[in-house]
Amino acid sequence: AQAEAEAALAAAQAAVSLIMDRVASACCVRWEPLPDSPTMYADPDTIHEELAAQPGLRLVPPVRLLRSDWIISRAAELRASTSAERRRELMLPRRQELEELEPSAFYTAEEVKNLPRGPRNAGFPMAVLAVSHSWESVGHPDPDGRTLVLLAHAITTAQTFQVSKGPYTWQTLPPRVAVFFDYCSLYQPPRMEGQKPMTESQHEALRAALARMQVWYAHQLTTCFFVTDDPQINSARSTPYHERGWPTFEYHVAAIGKAITSSGWPQLVDVGIGVDTLFERGVPLTPAALELLLESKGFTDGTDHGLVLSLYKKTVQCMIIGASRLIYSSCEWGPNEVGAFAAAWFSLCDRLEHFSLATNPIGPKGVSAFCEHIGPSTLPRLKFLNFFNNQIGDEGLRCIAELLRRAPPHLPNLKTIRITGKNDTTPEGKQVLEEACRARSIKIEG
View 1 (cartoon, rainbow, N blue to C red):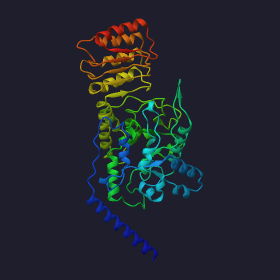
View 2: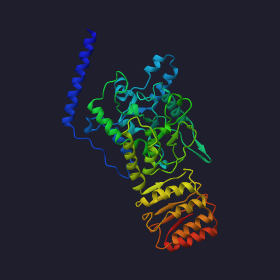
View 3: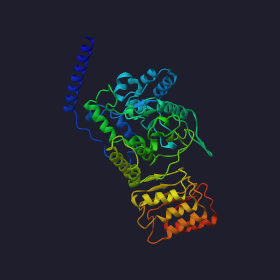
View 4: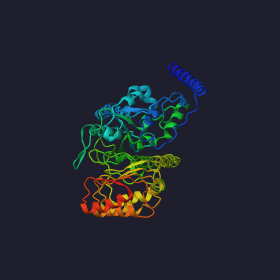
């Protein structure tokens, strides 16, 4: 009798859910994503939009963010558990189950808006953390809780330990952080026995979230933790982190445009290497290079290959090709990286007005690599060029001066060149540059 009653109740709930979906569908407008724009990856409203209840999605937010203290508490409970049964109970649930069982695990959209932001000099970064990780099985990303425990430890370490390099010391991660973890932040289809299928509204919310998945990693105001391979968690993985499709995409799309500045906390963290080690950002891949790289990576769903490539193309179109400012400071780039970036991107950056390579050890060869890729029609709108603290020497100054003397004029709209900081120049070298700049009415800072 009890089984019959439970079955009847389940059938009634399903019928009610179907009716509500149909009513909502009749009342709601069709959901359409916001159009992409060059400023969307610096605008906090882009994040808030993903967390808001959407009329076109039956008032369901595409994404929910977890409370960092809930993650830390859950991991502590998991570490303390001694039975396999209890550990299974503590396995992370899908978003739809977690919303029913522990709705307090999530921040509301309004609470995320009200979380304290980082300092002005760092661009006011948001207390939003996106996690990139491998799935340990097709059915569940973290069946034994190893990734959860490692993530919680990384968060608490980042909240208490200040990273230093040379004379610079970074701030700690804020004490309260809203966390994007795909399995709990997005609605999930059934992958394990006993899991209910998604409702129509949940399916549409997932589709909407996947259409803008790059935002969580590429946005300039979010922080990214990459749970790369580590001996403590890698034993159960059939495919390493860097051999998987989605993590490879997330890793590269996150590094396109985030600032690396000690005015804030580190916004790119490779957990496998260590929270106490600064992330070294490479040159952003072109879409063609990423496509080639993804050919050797594993996807659970083969159709995802085209999706992530499309998302990457949209991101670089906004963040590099359509950008008016590109700042690649403190990336540890040398001449090879400068040359690779210039060769890959300069011919496409017709809107660029501000370009910075500050605090990279590029030296005079880096300046030469920069100038080598400047033609008469390259970077036609560039106004500000920043070689602060680049160790360029007099040889680098002469290289810039030679570029400015070329005919027809190269960089025709250039107004200011910054050469302050540690650049190992002499008055004689500066005089050469000053003469070339005076002829073009270009200001020198330094």
